[in-house]
Every structure is written in structure tokens, then in C-alpha cells.
Length: 423
Ligand code: ADE
Image (cartoon, rainbow, N blue to C red):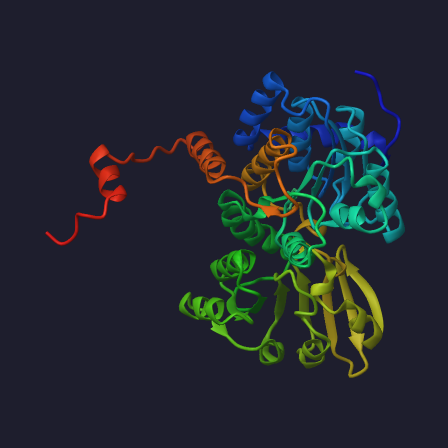
């Protein structure tokens, strides 16, 4: 294999550890493996240059390898300055010849240098987690837009942004909202974020959750997962919401529901998971008890009003990895995890491979779908066809050794008809 030369990683000698991590994750990803094997035979991405702006983790590495097996030239950069697994980034370069631009803890300037480096390779497909490549293609890198046949987006936050672009008529590409497949958000957002957020909080703090008042901002699929797992660890969970239906659901799921400014006065731990900004606001932080812990599990670090906290602080010191103490002028201390960036990837390793298996199977199928439908799609946000979602679930069930019932011809006929009612 010809060795490529351009990349930017922390330390290329970390590659052997990264390779082991990639292989371990791959073992838990049977759906992606089956797609990888089919792609290796059929080469549906032959001739395509694919730029992936994703969290550079061992799970992502397995997606990139499937895309490469499908014939694509793959280049990758980090979709967040704090989520990179440096050993994995090195292994992608050294062992798999994938130009990778990602360093854990990179500053904003380096982050955008990396983003621009992948766009410099003239991609035909872009893959985002948070929408930064798409944003660049519509703003300061417009000259790279014409050669892109389409894009895909991994996360809720990115899809919110894309739908706003579509609504304004600003979207200049067809985009697949991978997040909106059932086999993505019902599993990754709920069970993945649920487990990995708790994992990040525990790794950063080593606190006991039992008996704590644990405030979850937002009751979407991520918030539902976080609340469920915090409750399972014995925390007393409070939910804050803006949507009456979700608030009602949270109340009937057994949680206390109240405005954030009320929750602020009683909470021990606060986690935001909404896709919106300033969910943990300046006002809320002013009201918090001494010693409150705040974390963000949404894509962008704006969910916590970090800028105001920085301005309000009297002093700041680092206590442990990914745990900073902010002392305010009233002497109250607030503890921020992972610099306000997504705590599950900053302080832990993101979602486990078993759920990323389905998310990334959808990503691989999205790339194939964009190639197959080249020229036929318009500039809007698409969801992958339901049959593909069902296919992903069926392969996952098979891999888990679970079989399910089939409709009888009589049941099928009954469901398709309207003339059988009360007998
Ligand atoms: N998003 C959340 N968890 C992730 C993981 N393990 N890899 C890539 N993206 C992720």
C-alpha cells in the first residue's frame, strides 16, 4: 500500500495501541462488518473522494475502513476539538493509509486548519457530525461545493442546522439525515448517550450518583437515555423541557419536571442534551448551590453559557482531568466537566461500539445511496428509505441471536383490508 504523507496527529508512534482499539471495536460491530464485506466485493464508492468530519474514535475508524473497502478515497478530520482518540488517529494514518487530521485538545485554529485540509482534497461526498463541513461549503469554502454530490449528517444538532438551511432556501446540496433513521436515534441517542454520558461524568469526577439530584436539560432521545440511566444508578432525576408533550412524557415516566431556574437551586449535577444554546444559562449558574457540577452532552459547547461563566468567575483551577473548578465572586464553586464540550467523548470514549454499529451502518448506506442516486436528488434533507432501516435492524437482531415472528398471510391480508371490523 502506498504511504500517503499528509496528516496531522498527536504522535504517530501511538499507532499500535490504536490498531488494537480499532480491532476490538470492530468485533462489536457486526452490521458494519457485513456492509464492509459487501462493499469490498461490490465497490459502490469507486472513484469517490469522501471527507469525514466525525469524532475520531475506534468506532469511526471501522466506518472509515468500510468506506475505503467500498472503493472510496477517505480523508478524515475531527468533528470536535476534544473527542479524538490520538492512538486511533495515528493508526488510521500508519496502518490504514487514511489521511487523518485530528489531535485531542487541538485549539480552534488547528481545528479549522484540519477542516480545511480535508476540503482541500476535493471531496465528492462529505460526512458530518455537527455540520461543520457543510457550513464551510456554504460559507468560506464555496469553491469546493460544485464537485460534492451530497452529504450526510450524524447528529441531532447538525440536522437542526440543516433543516434551518433548507427552510431558508440556503441549502445547496442533498443531505441524508442519518440521525433521523430509527436504527440511529432510538439506539445511539438513547442507549449510547445514556451510558456514555454517565461514563464521562463518573470518569471525570468519581462521585456517587445514588441520592444525588440529577438535572437533565431536554427530554429528546438523548435526554431520555441520560435520565433513565441516572435513575438506574439511584439518582433523583429532575427534567427541564420547553416542549409540553415531552415534559408530560417525562412527568409520566416518573421524573420531577420544572423550569431550569427552579431546578438550579436544588440540583447537584446538571447535564444539557438539547442541541440548543444556553440551556444551562448564566442565570441558572448564578442560582446553583455551592459545588454544583455542570456537563454538556449536546454537540456544541454553547449548551452551557461558558462565556458568561468565564466572565463571572473570580478564579479557576483544574482539579482532575476534565474537571475545572470555577469560583464565583459570591465564593460559590461550580464544577465544569470537559470544558463544557460533550462530556461523553471528552471525558470518556463516546458511545460503545454496539450502538455505533447501527449508526455507522446507516452512514455507510447513506454514502452508497448518494452515489446510486447521483443527479436525482434535490437540495433538501432526506431520511434513508425505511427498507434500509429495517435491514439494519434485522442484521443486528440476527447478530444478537434474536429471532422474531412473521405475519401470516391471513394477518397480512387483514392489515391491508378495511372491511373486517366488529364481528
Ligand atoms: N458519537 C458518540 N459516540 C461516538 C463514538 N464512540 N464514535 C464516534 N462518534 C460518536
